[in-house]
Length: 290
Image (cartoon, rainbow, N blue to C red; front, side):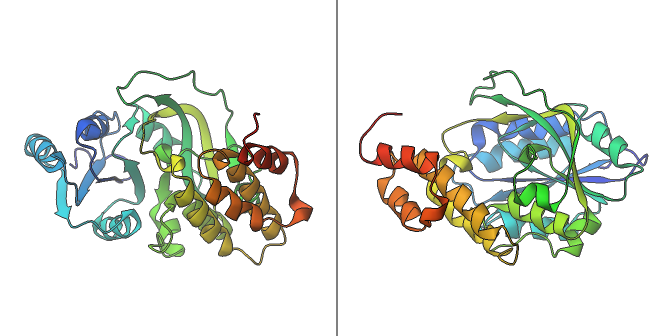
């Protein structure tokens, strides 16, 4: 899908799994970008619905790269796609989300004279499963994050549907880790620790679709993979505190719906890190309100 030679080539990678009702809207949002020097790579990762047929119809019309494979997970799929992609800028994009038309153009323009920026992102607006707006997007300013900002969660983070990577930054840290299935947090930490900055534009660049199978709603998945991610930075002085803060947050979220996981989180939380969230989570576990 190479349509221009002006500006750096951007490789957009969409890995799709069972998103038949919404995959076409995601692909079409890439095809509608005002920035034209884009190659689009779409991979169906073992879908059991009619995603492949829908994607093939679009591929016949627009000629983008499309491959079908047995399910092997997002990190491995992204690494393989990046290896054959030609762009100096890489945009992994969710098959359930929608790019706004100016997204890539704005990010490419911003990165033009900033080699220190390894990742460029932006803000999002949430939509529901039917595409209707759920809320007004947050009014967040331009912000630059370093490793400490990301690891200590000192500033509002980068929404996944807006991440645009320099290939050199991805290659410097060895790409995505197939052993950690929560891709975004780990790659942001690795790239910022390697000395690059993560800059987040104030513009709304994508619509993030909220639905029943969003990753963040799977509490067990989040706990396992975030703690596995943090463990790679166990040499940081604040490692224990960062893990405890995350455990407290997840304890509060799952105290009513998954008491077994909540109990596990509580047992792994040293008493010196107990706070108001811990007590509210414990109260919920015992059947209380709040």
